[in-house]
Length: 106
Image 1 (cartoon, helix red, strand yellow):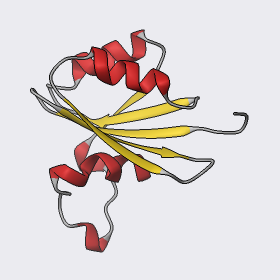
Image 2 (cartoon, one colour):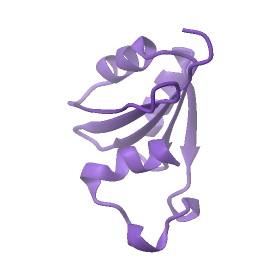
Image 3 (cartoon, helix red, strand yellow):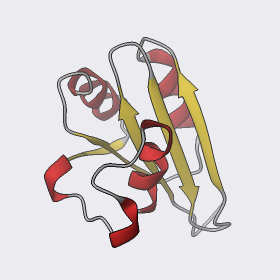
């Protein structure tokens, strides 16, 4: 589909990853949880309407994921937790269950 783009936010942990994707054309927000490993999240990223722009909060567990995503041709950015803008109602750090969609919306 022409004119579409998907933004994706990841919350990466040692044994799991949470992801949220926002389709710019439709405004649809979808979320998914992955177990350990890189194959499933990379395949999911490649299946989304492109171009895809993804990010994850900097940390030791996500660096391998970042490298795999870039090697697969996915636009991935690493964001600094302290530099992520938060509104007054967001609290100091979003809960794990909604952190991925928090990043996708920013």
